[in-house]
Image (cartoon, rainbow, N blue to C red; front, side, top):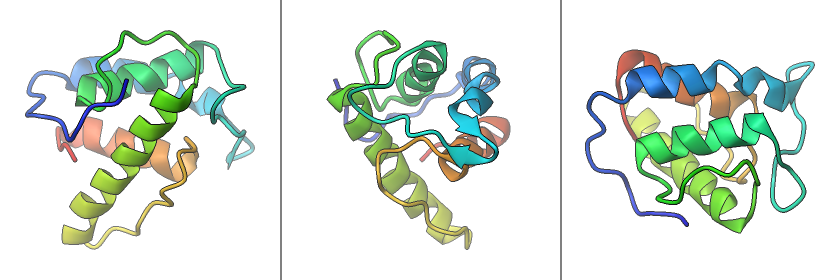
Amino acid sequence: MPAGPPPSSAGKAPTITAALRSLPSLLKNGKATGYKAPASSGQAVKDWQQVLFDLGFITAKPDGKFGPGTEVATRQFQTAANTAGAKSGKKALSVDGIVGPATVARASCMAMSGARP
């Protein structure tokens, strides 16, 4: 279930960073493999949901199924990341609900820096 923009997530970076370690499996040869509702499932999806959960974009426990709620939360993350990125001159993400290389990279940067959308 998607949530609105997240409150402060102080102390979440280690969990987010751990979840992000498996996200390269969402990619194949640097391209998105199409992790989008409703057909995608597995550990990489669960890890992405954990990132969204830790950032406050979803409130449901990660289940590894990329359904409509995960897609909406991914779009919300992409929109919020664009708003935050615009202030620092970063290239906008496509707000498409797909967890591709740019979305994973932006989430990684945020986790490493402690920044939140």
